[in-house]
Length: 222
Length: 228
Image (cartoon, rainbow over all chains, first blue to last red; front, side):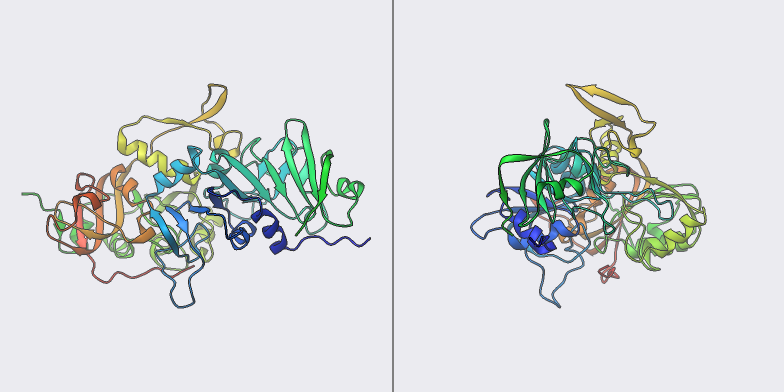
């Protein structure tokens, strides 16, 4: 059977279905940002931006961008009715104090114990940059990692131990990839969903840590 | 009579000494005090330590200041943004020291300096390279890392409205680091788009109270940093 990995938008759509009504959510740069496009419209979700915004709205129409209204990725944004603006220290108190319910973060590597690496490789050519990644990973009430299941050359990104420098230790609750949805539990990595056509053995072969299949596992509906 | 309004950028920046720690507000394209940075360049202080979230983009504002060679150290969370060529060149050449600080820790360290707090324990960066060499402590079964206050000699901030007492409002998300940096520096210098009479800003809408501000200069049509 031919395996159909999820596209980036399909991953975002799958994650969007799991965003609870009423949640305060911080969307990381890249793939996580797409999730806002796919949260079911009957749910009221408040998006947080580290530079001092609660209540991000849709992207502005071309020509109406405001350089003073941007998100963490420095992209222009709009405000939803009910939005608020505050200063940086409060924005990070919301993160570091656990008030933000859920952080969706891109990941370079996730370990079986929930360690997250998403801010630095071991490449000395580039100056390091961390932004709010460590605050979000350590502070948000729940952290979901969104990523391709393997690197471009097929190496696993889910590992027993991260080889890249950690962003935070033991923080990831759930991993969404283009192949599977995996919970990080005290009993190890539990596969909740897999894409159509993929066998568990094939998924294990693409994963650098032991995984187990939940009894009630399902095929991912993209 | 209290009057913090000065009538030129030169007066606003006067007296900044070599070796100062300069806090510069702004995040990406929002809230960069471009005219104050240009005036700092004209003022000529050197051997500076600059504390700011990004290391500038292109050849303007923070990047322009770095390009003068008068900044020996930058403390920031995200120096490598799109178009941050000046910083990357200086860094590669070993001509600038970088202290990388998680963004929330950067902000909270300045708040601590402004609030008379001698340090604080945070979970951010525990178990990472950015906590190496720092004291850690278990509190209620959770590991924390000790972070020290980060105080400025000078803060440069962009505001929307100001009055002669130094009360400030900010436009949209240009607020970002402004209120925290204003309280964290010995000399807080503000460029405001408009200076208004005392009382014109409704008290409930004052964002930075004037007690944190030392000098205000009106820049009616500030240069806007472009979207990056």
